[in-house]
Amino acid sequence: MRAFRKILPLLILYFTSSSSLLVLNKVAIKAIPNASLLLFTQLGSTVVIVAAPALVGATRVNFKPKGKVIRAYSTVAVVFLATIYSNFQVIHSIGINPFIVLRCSTPLMVSVLDWALMGRTLPNWRSLMALCGILSSGSMYARLKITNPSFGVNGNGDASGGLWWSAIWLVSFLLDMVYIKYVVEAYPCSGLERTLYQNFLALPILVLLLNVGAEKYSVFEAASAAQSAWLAVVMTCFAGAALSFTGMSLRTELSATLFTVLGIVCKMASTLLNEIFVEPERDLARLSCIAAVIISSSFYKQAPLRQKGCDAHKLDVYKYIR
Image 1 (cartoon, rainbow, N blue to C red):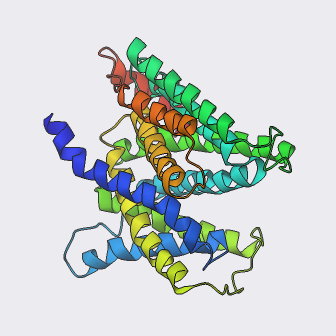
Image 2: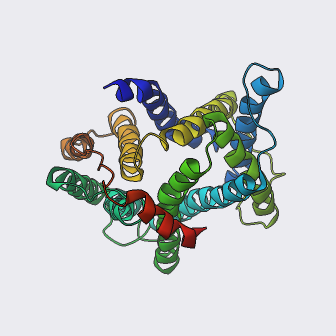
């Protein structure tokens, strides 16, 4: 109970920032239609928000980490950006509904990786049923949302490219959940330092993306957007900083599987708000599916560490990852 009280503020802030960022980005993209530039703005703002108080002495941050820490968090930055970029490409190729199914399947996969790599036990029967409930309820919601049964976005999606991007996203996401969990445990840093290193080291990679012409809109192409869209950009910067900090902090407190389940709850909560306040018709079946995902998540219990040989097991596996 004491441990839960310790992380409760982080959970609330993570939930709030994650849910709001999904909505704000839809408005902010109208002001900055280049997704890579918008992400660069958000990550750069996070670096400033974290570094500025430390520079004036309000907080303590190590601006000169050891070389092994820089190398580890450089890899973290690559995995982080690969997950975000492939996420965008999957949704663009096959649409949000198939992606929901893919996302809801990840806790089951991560639970196996938690057992194989992180020294935890497999989920007990109750937790296993909860993970299956997340997958089945999320799949049903996606099926109800599909108006055209054809594969893709309204039947016009890139099926071949979508499968490739789905595979890339899945590998990147699983690495994000498990490898970054390993890094934050293997290289002790404060939550502010982890946030600073991840975001700062991701900026040069984003600069390369901005110059390869992968985006539909040029960096120098201005968008005529309302003042509310630019306000949304500013709000995404603060929400992104809060999400990055709480996410990196919670990784040390939660197992990879529980962190994955938490992310799904945040996404489905945003979807619930969208269904209630944005969708023209409030469909009871869809709302029930969303509620089922959230309720199923509440029954998941973090798998404990195995008692014997846990640390040795983790070291034997991770010497190959490193």
